[in-house]
Image (spheres, rainbow, N blue to C red):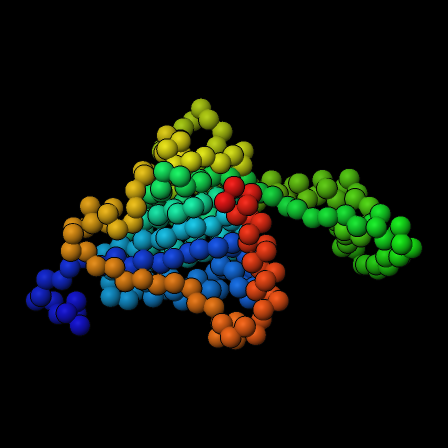
Length: 265
């Protein structure tokens, strides 16, 4: 209430939003635009904060969901004229760095993993297994590319070529986002878009982050010791909290654990 009284001087307020986990499709228990949207809306608009700080810890995931969340952060920041600071914990890689780049400044711990600015598509091939056990795969389509990369059929060169075109286009979108957000901070004599990862000190030298630092002391340094914090975080649906979707949660957890493992975490 005190913050609403114009004749009383109020202390600075920073809204802290935690964005943690793999970025995936809505409804799978992972971080998505659908789950992040209401939290971000509240963080930027409730109480007119002096800044929004993002606690980031994500190995990446869906390119589309990463793009949607990042675009929402930028849109809200511009609408409310609120600066955004990202603070990386274990990792901001791939889609996780896509989110980080939406901030005006990026800070990280010395041991944080940064980067992986690339695109990956993984699958499996089981056609030999089916053949060995005499199982016949029957697929009927209208459109010659409708069953592209069917894992139960032998891989086709033309399918791989089509997939690579899609991956290159998504990669170009990722690069454009990073270049537009980091601008002159990035070196012109180094290719940062190979999918490589770095720890924070090297990432700082490469212009991918703005410094090594942690949320509370950095916000106190910028806004003063009396700065207050209001925290926002994602909540699992009620039925999931009761264990009604144990199998789905377990599958999501395995996938997320595999994503983190790619970065030695």
